[in-house]
Length: 562
Ligand SMILES: [Zn+2]
Image 1 (cartoon, helix red, strand yellow):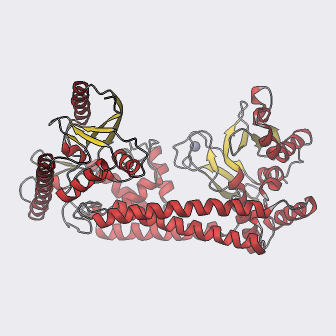
Image 2: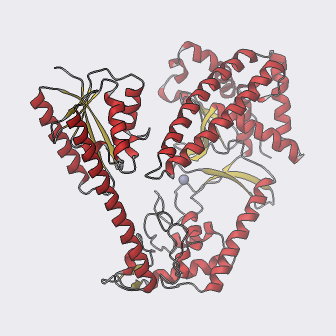
């Protein structure tokens, strides 16, 4: 028999020596296949999936995907699914396990178990059927007991911690970074130096100093950051804000997940910051958040928000403003973490002149019809599209919620998640059709009309009326995000500050300095323009953009400053 044989391997998160178990499962299955004269054609592996909870049967697991394919008739009859033992395939209650096996075998796919040598087909003998059922029941019971043991062990630990008896500090998985467990696990060792720093941080915050400045101070001292807060070493604003809001500084143990979620154990840790200072620091932190939001609303806004990055470290770069020595207000883009002293790119990249040139180059390309009000059939299609997108997003969110809160015995939840998936797929197809309709209906507007719109929106974006300019700018932002991949702040070889705009697809790019001059097109870097490598239809699409860039190279803009 030359069957299509797939090995299935799985381990759950609480299993020890995870690498070893996979190797062993493979070896046993391969030996078995050899004995049968089968050649293995593939392997499915689920890592860290619990068969007791049925995680390996969900659509994001390999076995779940395989079962779905079997269900849809995409797996050829005669295929063999080979596992080391029955409990690799199921630890669910017996009826469910048997129904699952029947579901697979009834589609002509066989299931083989290496440990017993059993091969299940569509019509098992009564002995095989009963033997399997009994073992399924045993597997499930064993898992249920183990799960129950874990729950009671955790409850016992919580009770010990409440009375501070035994090795009660083990209740905490991770210990706050200013504490250590003592050897007996019945008390804490305090790190005085770190506790002093935590108190400094609270005091600074209470004095009205923001998280960014606090982080900068700590990085300058330098105080070695504890633990891994972020991928970039050093103190960051997030770590500071998290610390200020950490209940452990007041001695509270607040589980963030698991069976004790929602409970609090007071006095579990020593209090290291007094209550008054905690209250003041948190209140000050909250009020700063508020003012920051208000400031962002008025004045200049970054047309490339969400697209602007630091070329040095890859973090977000943000727009801010300041007043120069002559008292003139100017806006600039700066690396988000350089203020905290964590990136070498410390420059302030003057924004306004760059924006003018970037508008010249990108605007008419971005002013696609879809950003304007339209009527009739097209309007209807657009409304339908928006509605579909909303419904799909809602259903996705709902499915995600169900999957993450999925309870081990909740077959209903599992069914619901599957049904939602089917619904989402159907809606997505409908959405694709609608998008096609819109594209057909929109057509192209005349050149004159197009130019008029472009100029209108450009004027609106510069308007003194904040409402008008805000609206135009948010429209532009949306448009730009459809054609621009990123705007990076970088340096030329001479150390000159430049903005590098990369267009979608990454084939085209342009460098603009802080005076608004196009200094060269990035596409020239390899000796000839990169767009020559684009397929003809894409070259035609990008033609207006290429023309604009060329114009700027030949006729540079007068400096926009002054
Ligand atoms: Zn940076």
